[in-house]
Image (cartoon, rainbow, N blue to C red; front, side, top):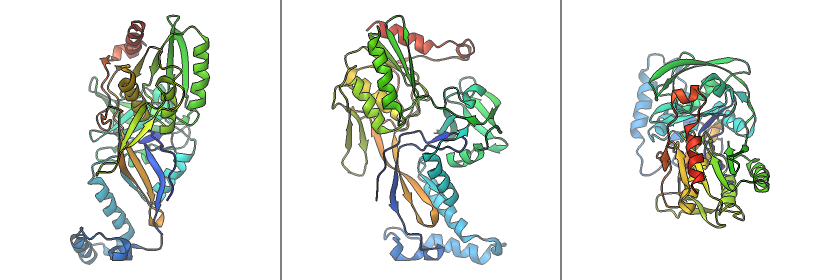
Length: 402
């Protein structure tokens, strides 16, 4: 049983073939692929003592004996369907059963780089929702926005569709087109958006000087290269005239926990709690602490968040508010605060199951709740069309007061 670095990417990142799944431990457990469907009732395979499967077998037997097209029955698919039903009963969009092909896609996607539309999606209030289009991606260029609800993918209605099913429909070769029918909660607008899949280059960080003394830093993800790129940009900042910081985490889907710890270490006292992992069921919590030298810990700052700020972004924003009372400005964050473990099962299948939840240093749960900004600033359709950013404008006003 091995653990791989904890990834906090939001549930799915659509880079055509790519799917970076949020907050999971990879390869936690293996089940020998030596038993088929026939072994399901065998006690040695771990059938629990506190569960009665007689009802399941009654239904199974009835189908086997009475279904009109018995010759077409596929026992393996029936078992997969039963497992999917069990998982669906948990009402947790991040706990997912993968059939062999889906399991292979998942593993390939997590380790690769791909072309596609460049948008993150997830389930919010039982609706397939755009978490965020990536910077300069085909999705962003086509007009997709954070918070858009996906009603149809091409001609397929998304009601009751899992994220994995949606991803399989949105996948496609470079230069092909996928049509998304979306509704926009801000004005109840329903529209079709055609997106041409293409190569995606995900930026990590960029910064500029505002008002002669504000370092405006945009952090787009917490990927593997973020620590070194962040360090290089911060050294540029320190060599300049900036004496305060705006950290923009809007539309940042997250990344690796270790990266959030590393970056938190620039802004916080070394050893400060960044996040708490709550395993529930009476298990002991685990604390994650800031690493680094706290070079920026005394520099005044504010943080920008919105509906596309998720997972590691929420962890860093929450840690800065709890430890330094940094003001959060913008809109409520997404609320992805759970950890998944990926278990490889028999016959090439796998199960990604939620095993823990993230808490801020003060003990606030992020999962399903998100972070409420200290100063709420809406961006209207008119703002977008006029290329205005009232959230950034307000953050400039606030940081100048510090």
